[in-house]
Image (cartoon, rainbow, N blue to C red; front, side, top):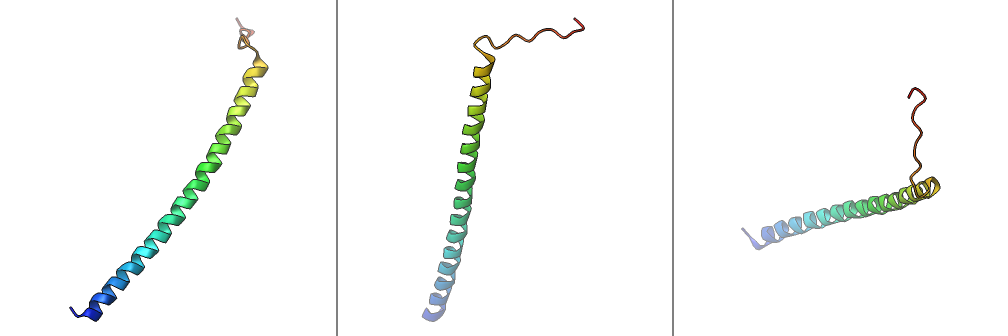
Length: 69
């Protein structure tokens, strides 16, 4: 293997690695965006549950039996 062919092989490998790193970076960035969106959604839903619990009251609101009982 000549020095020129070795150099070309290494350049191809480096180019491939750089492309893979960029693709992985894009994937990680997209995942972080999804994680942030899901965290906000969890906080919003948690606030809704807290509000609903507060509206029910401390006893939890006993549900009356159905009319056929």
